[in-house]
Length: 107
Image (cartoon, rainbow, N blue to C red; front, side, top):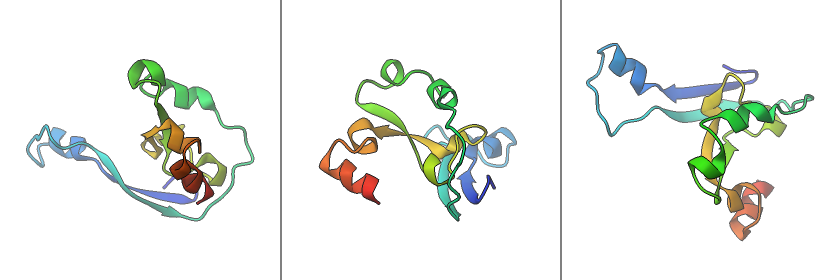
């Protein structure tokens, strides 16, 4: 639980490290679902945290990529302390620069 959202996370790495399941190089931890009630933030978004997550976008992934949020900051999503809320996303989609991005942002 983080603020008003519940994050359901498949933490396969913890299970492997405890010997509860065998190691499988094809499996990764993943966010399965998020649910909750929007709770718009009244505070400024601390972008330093997002910028620091796995390094600079262009250097790590290339110019076409952004770090997107499963739950947007504007409705209560966070990065600080809940990095599982962040994922790699095409910049033209995330920023609404493409037709699909305009639809995505309208939702």
